[in-house]
Image 1 (spheres, helix red, strand yellow):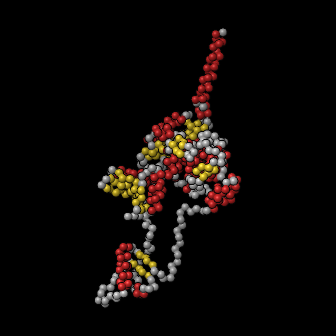
Image 2 (cartoon, rainbow, N blue to C red; image 1 turned 45 degrees about the vertical axis):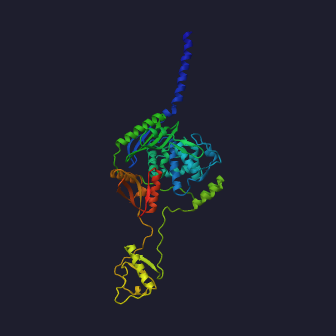
Length: 485
């Protein structure tokens, strides 16, 4: 009888053990397939891979594409960060992790972007997709078009948030490529992925990967993801000196073990990446956004949002030119006073021109023995009132060009003052590599002063200098403009 009494006790202990194992280590997470990729972000070279092209559940890594398209839509004038987005019932009903949005609520796009990037909020991601494309299904189709243009050949998106859905699959290689595009295509927004907390409008949210950001030197993003089918996923990037490495893991067994594995892979990447390498950043994919006017009107009519109607129809009706087309040269009118110069010393020419005007205004004719006033050879004053000039023989082989009033490429930017010339040159090189889009064609120049060495980029237009400074300041890099004088 004693033995019979002990058997139920042992059986009960076994059952309790099984229950605790199910709680502490979800069986689905244990079963999630593992995949990993390590890339040198500067040239796209894969330094390590394991099951890199196996199609797996990406979970919230999906939000990297949702945010990429949001940045693209803002850049191309489809929507602005201050647009008030109306929250639908569908978005408000998304399961956690979520911001806690309510149906009918209005909130600025910038807060939705922060919530999706930092907290990985599913309701915010869905709201972003609906605001840009009219519906989550339409947004998913745009996600797939953009992924294809990037070269993400084994990725298929079905939603904006990454919750498990049949056919919603990607690979470690494709997600690493997407991370590289986020870093280099939209550096002005990339700092979002390193914020450990952010104001999301209705609350302050904390980063889902703050432990790795705090513990790994140089880590500055990018995105976590977890579902039972996917396991613990992470695309992480770190920068040390001139080197930047991206590591991606699918199918981690827990947050702790996943972070440890990613740190190990980042270390491997830095050990294999050369200190100096030619930058070969992938080209920005062609713009795949925009909707036809009829589509915009139909989607707005379905939502019943009058404010959205006017905004979307206007965005669809206007064909935005990213670069202004050069104005065609107008035909020359009949003779009128014109000031034209070729290779002119402007100050000298103006002084001599003023001297001529003063003599004619005084009304005194110069004596025959007096030396005549010399007109500058490279300055032409064309006027119907100056017959003498018109009668004079024209100089031979004179090249006449138009005076520029735009200032040309005479502007620059300063990115700091450093104790040594070597440090200033190193900062200039690092900045040039990080900001190739805006600093291409500029001249790196170190100016030595009594209290240090200024690191300058010269040979920019005013607009180029302004844009470069704004992009650098968005990445917490000190920068101010240097005028022509």
